[in-house]
Image (cartoon, rainbow, N blue to C red; front, side):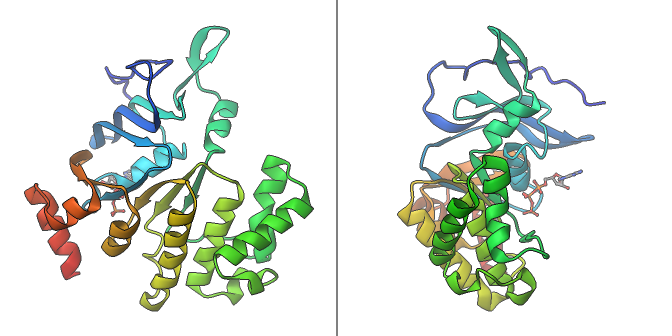
Amino acid sequence: MQQSDPHDQPAAEPADGSDDAYIRFEQVVKRYGDNVVLDHLDFRVAEGERVTLIGPSGSGKTTILRLLMTLEKANGGVIWVNGDSLSHMRRGGKLVPADEKHLRSVRSSIGMVFQQFNLFPNMTVRRNITEAPVHVLGVSQDEADQRAGELLELVGLAEKIDAHPTQLSGGQQQRVAIARALAMRPKVLLLDEVTSALDPELVAGVLDVLRNIATTTDITMLCVTHEMSFARDVSHRVLMFDQGRIVEEGPPAQIFSEPREERTRSFLQAVLED
Ligand SMILES: Nc1ncnc2c1ncn2[C@@H]1O[C@H](COP(=O)(O)OP(=O)(O)OP(=O)(O)O)[C@@H](O)[C@H]1O
């Protein structure tokens, strides 16, 4: 049984009433058994903002993305996405626990790309990209096909539309996974170490695609990466985590060039030596 947390107050609106944050974590607690992974975490991400999460292994970065995708549930606090709470909803003027329909609706504004590409091996690239828009959003197959073509153009794989994932390199598969996430027209894109599973020579191509998406769209991005030059290029803000708390945050130029905290300095040193 999960313990309840004193901060797990149902809330209808962000605590300060008006809040322009698109994503907001308010006193969020996540535990696995006795392991406190997120410890009363507070942060906000504005609409269109691109934020990179850095920090040592186990500091809770992936957990944050998984909570946003509702793949995990917080033990305390409230997570807001565009004014909707992931724990509660209003029904008939009352606050009730969020149901699956509410969560599905919130989740539909969020796309995620994982370290492993998770493409359907038996489907062509086209079907990998069109399956969810057609079956979840109810978009016509023609419209979904047209969008798949445009997205494959964007990720530089237009000629692979009828290929199967097994015929593609890891980097190409990851670019298809990015196109698939964008096909749902998300407002937020979550990127979880999307180049970590790739051979080194394939990393740059995937990062170039993401740089292009970051700079040519107004999509809100939360990105977990060890690619510091990519983080420097695309992020508006970097959050440095340790043991489930933010130890430092700031624009990339400051965090990477003049970190204030010893923990940030030693983390960056270790990544650079890697
Ligand atoms: N399903 C789970 N069951 C138990 N513990 C878990 C589970 N998922 C994550 N954890 C623990 O939560 C902590 C935070 O993990 P998380 O993956 O969020 O860290 P991270 O900062 O993303 O690390 P990395 O950079 O290695 O991916 C770790 O101690 C991890 O062992």
